Amino acid sequence: MSGRVSTWANRFIAAAIVQGALALILTAYFVLGQFAWLKPEVSRVIAGGSAGTWFTVGYVTY
Image 1: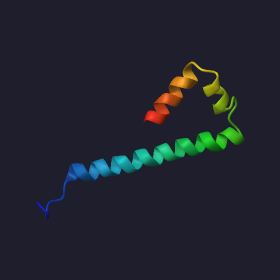
Image 2: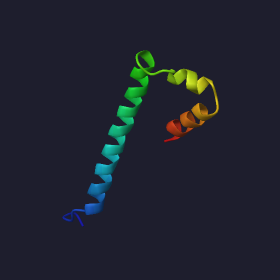
Image 3: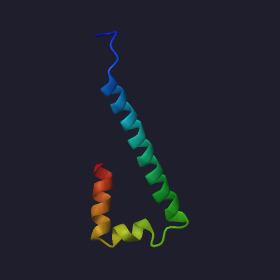
């Protein structure tokens, strides 16, 4: 099996790279937006409870 190329393994690796890049972009947007343009700030939404708390739990556990 050393000579076989797995199509599904290549797809999985590509999907993992794309997901990682999207997570990096989303994180950078939230962190940089916290200082500049996001209103209300992400920290206030999280501290307010309710939907912000569930968003944070989902984002951290992802």
